[in-house]
Length: 210
Image (cartoon, rainbow, N blue to C red; front, side):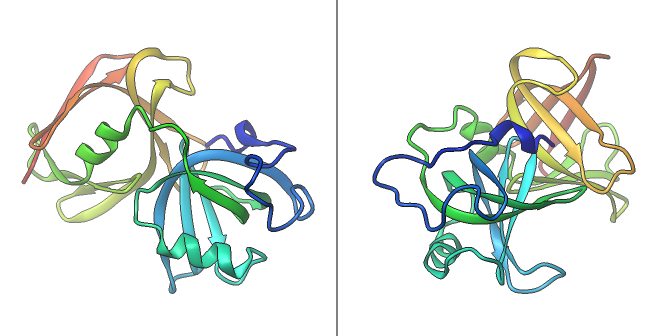
């Protein structure tokens, strides 16, 4: 996860008024990302935005203005947005964000086709007990019906450990004792097949629909 990459001192753009002065509640932050969804239950009710392998939780009872929170709750899952806010806290697996403003991102995500195609359940062609569930930008590893690990997905042309070139998928494990990420080259993802190559070793991982 890489919260520092989006730290800024400005606002989104002219005409999009800030709900609070950037930097007045915490470190000012701006980025583009996907709406993961909202929940009224769990340990931290609110909405989640995922950008570049980082989870940003906008707490339901936080300082986000009510009209901004209502707009976020109404946004469809996997809406591609440009957002601005202040980072209130940074934890091991997510950052807590006061959301000041957001809107549809001015440019399309070049990896949207991969995000869309990856959604749903997958089964390894090597081991039918090994499954993957992709929900938004959350990747769950399941083995023999038991959850094994959960990671945040990031698509791009570079990975944190230095790999670059082509279309890459990086997984940032949630809840690991030490920050860890896995990098894969995307051979292809379509309606029935997901084929990845683990870098740098070159191991092929192939999944099909159950």
